[in-house]
Image (cartoon, protein in one colour):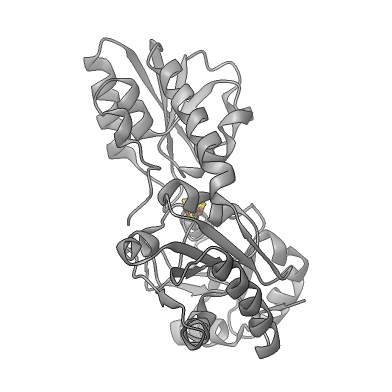
Length: 336
Ligand code: SF4
């Protein structure tokens, strides 16, 4: 099984360069077992080391408010690459260590799947944990007569061929050239997002489990039927709650204010709801017909079924209000 590499040396160097006095270290859930080790490792590079124990959902969720409250001068964000660059924030992405043998075994399964589908040109993408293997994978595919394209994303994306759950611009940039998208990574969070963004097949190579599978055909229809049903119900709503998060990379206050104006222009009621973590249980008894989520789009796309109140994304709201056509549906990616 491939192992995750956690090398704190670059973080130590950054703290020394910054002459940091107080740092907040933000870690992914999977690294909580290393909390005390991280503090022990960093304590010689910075006088006061805090590890933030709240859940962290990505580089969109930086502890900027904590920084002020605790008078910290630096943040080390472990696990994701930069969305927004700040001079006193250091991002330490984590990668899996894959051997040549493991890469070859995955490629051999992938080639069989591509041959079965008569596919010889693909968009090649990965999440951050596998992104540094894309060049090598591209070369190996080329040696086997499969052309692959590694796209460049919008400003929210740090590396070529890298996807976020809310941004698939690397795939969109190479769509005309390819017959399918091949994703290297574990879990379904990213590939499910891809299904919303491309109508071509999505093939998932999971190096942790050594599996290769196509997921798009199974899911796209079922998913779109649900979203269109939600929009149809929202078109009958008389009152809307517009959710705005304060999370650093998910804030969309201006978009929320524009939506409020549009809703009111249609003779309906709109209320602004401000929060940090957007979860269903905080909305108990809210008393609006429909919620509009301007935070992470995946809250709606993955989890709307678990909300007691109807919840939709901004584009869906504009369709429900008759401002956009149904065929203009899009997954409300974050571009910046
Ligand atoms: S906005 Fe959502 S999908 Fe995008 S990085 Fe943050 S948590 Fe992930």
